[in-house]
Image (cartoon, rainbow, N blue to C red; front, side, top):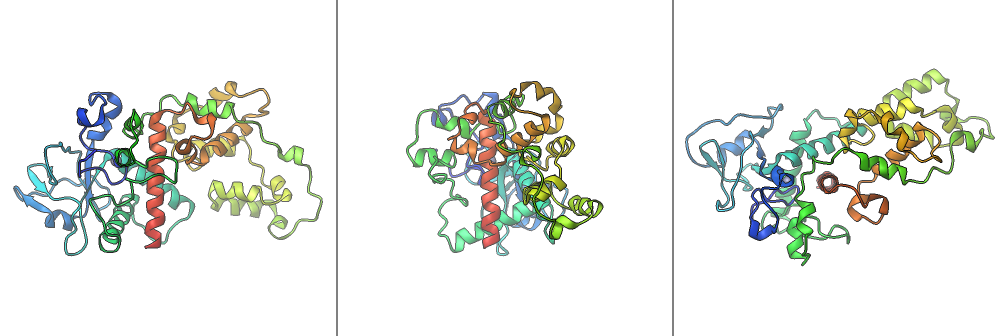
Length: 356
Ligand SMILES: [Zn+2]
């Protein structure tokens, strides 16, 4: 892969050349790669205009602080410029105020915004920027940092030409650089929105051993309540109402007393699985009747509640499919694998931006 033009979030191309990727460009699994948008600001739009009529492209963003183009495309014989309407723009080049335009896959923008939103849901920030504006802000910071302090060569802002912590290439860009061949390109280029019927999710849960302890098996606490444990139930409930579900789960496991005081029932698990707060990267769960999958559970999984809890624990760590050292995940679809990869890249971008 020798093109200088690629999506800086996933490392994937905007145009598939048969002779480079050895995969069929017409395959439906790869059509998402052609769905491209340009993300930036209106000032960057003005300063990056190379040629063409002076026209203000439609802004598809709901946030007037950031510009998001309508769907456009880019083909390999072109060089750096992108066309929006009849106007040609230079991308990935900062203006005197340090603003620029990023060409990105629509799917990567969507996954990035979902990731940022899920992070902010858990730890609300003291600002009201939209996830899209924050995504642009983080990419811009990373670009400027890499350009002026990191010796940026090319457009690889996020180290996508390197190994993922020793578990393989981080992107299709790295496949060639690291000398990985065979069919390695495929999973990096598969549509991250196509994850099938989710039967594979419940197969992973089916293959998960039952938990060692439940509140009933652990038994009653053997000491007097202390601190938070002494709060009356109605006050404790009120406090829990302000917490993110994962924080409620953390609190539940803090002590044997709280294990009993904060019962995580069926309703808790199924509500928060379906509202996307527990596993925001599997948003298809919103449309699924979880109860229909209850029949797939093993006999030694005692309840639907335990099944939901297992599901959350199994899929909370989005590194598992990437590392693929856990055989329960052998059958996950490549689209889900790719989704987790992009999700983790955005997560790393959030961490890197906080450190800049
Ligand atoms: Zn992408």
